[in-house]
Image (cartoon, rainbow, N blue to C red; front, side, top):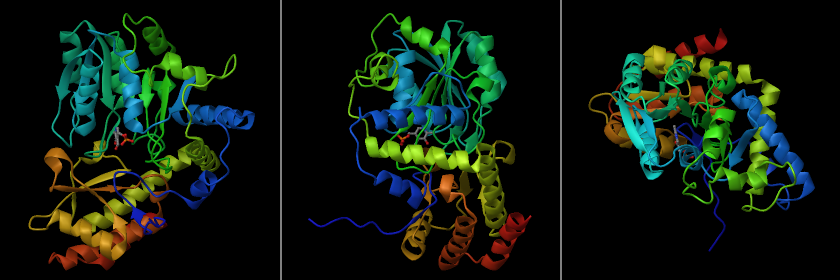
Length: 391
Ligand code: PLP
């Protein structure tokens, strides 16, 4: 065997996003023991940084040592008790995964469906809550990565409270890209991922739980079915009060990376980070629309960090992506499920939300479309993006 040297790509798919040299350098620092006092000090800073990012005072805020899916499972495995009814919004891949999690945790999932690329009406969600007075939880995806739809988390959480339900929110693609206000919106359980708008390497899942959520976990009739994700056990390591003890060997260097990402967000300022994502999205949208491409999602519910573009008739979706990778070292994403072959998913997440990437993406897509016998004016598209960037 020989060492693996990856090619230098630009990552503008649905995640992972570009990881900055600064984060990679942080991860290359010497590994400490996971109970080393200096490492424990850093863990406390990670918890504080995540609280600032989630905009919460929740004491139980920490990164699960595994990807976003494990954060999702941590929320469902701990909060859903045997026989609990959970209302789940499904308008893409990740709502369906929530349903699976509810069922595997022993609960009953009541689904509120909406067509992919749209979001259900609040009346439909309310009707499901009204029809299921025993429902204990409302679960929804804040930023649906499979379509680029932005859910109105504040309104959904308010509705959940009206029906005495807790909320579980997927913030894998939203955290660090658009406003997430855990305390302001009174969300009870939230999970995210390190590899999207935080621009870290994949493999960590920040989570946070309100006091109401902890109360529900403590009142469980049955033990949590997962040993690794059982909050009462994992907190012996992350809680810190009364001394930490071994639960699992933490991914020490990955946590250095997350720590550095949090430092970078605090230096730039969280609001500025949101603005950067919004501006890069506007510039990209101006350029792509000038190329004649159309968005899957209506403007009012469109995420800045995940742009689902409809593949023009007669253009081979996969061939364009392969061309971008080969000729421009640029990765964009394919459609999932019913969207396979129909959309491209272009990410503007974290470090990838930059002027340089917007310009590269427009130039490369213009070139790829021309190579696929779809004539476009790449110069005019770049100019349209520049107008936004220069404003
Ligand atoms: N939820 C959403 C909205 C996602 O986009 C993803 C990953 O793309 C996940 C959950 C799962 O995260 P991971 O792939 O890190 O396990």
